[in-house]
Length: 237
Image 1 (spheres, helix red, strand yellow):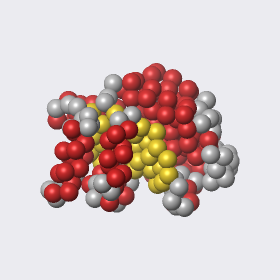
Image 2: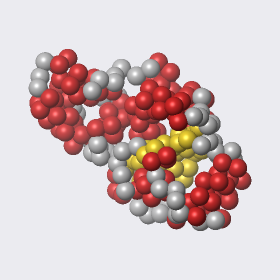
Image 3: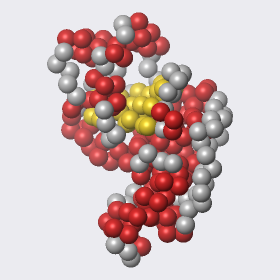
Image 4: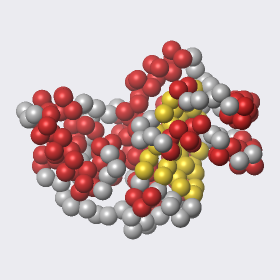
């Protein structure tokens, strides 16, 4: 994890309101020097809120036109658990092309990827990075920073839930030393093979530790578990 992301995550722990979360989104956009960054959460009750850098007039237009019903990004993320590159989505329908054209006219970049987040009790969130770049530049950016932004996305979601005083965030059981070691190495950017080699265990054994930690933390996936452990101070980098 780079120093700039570590600094951002440290500052995010101080966020205590939606205004603070909005400031965090703007700060993270500037850290990675992209056009726009969006965090949008929808709870199972229908309650939703967002922190974003889009122009308010574009947001109003998006809502007024009901674009969320036909947005390939929303539909694509709702069906997946992994990050979605906008260029890989189906924009062939006329309504989708209209949405894309209106967005670019309103100042959106031609490139984007969105990270779907599935939180506790049916909560669903999207973390989106949007930018103006060539395909080659965008591929280089996502290759270099994808892991960091996934971590930032889940960390921001955990912080948003904690700010609400949500009883969906449970203290959980404590992690064992090996579970802590496993998540720490993954948070540092190692893949499973590298982490297993560092700990001198098999990848199968590593998977057991990761799954155990994920269960204790109530996490939907490994990245969510890492973000959760960082948020609760169970691992340090």
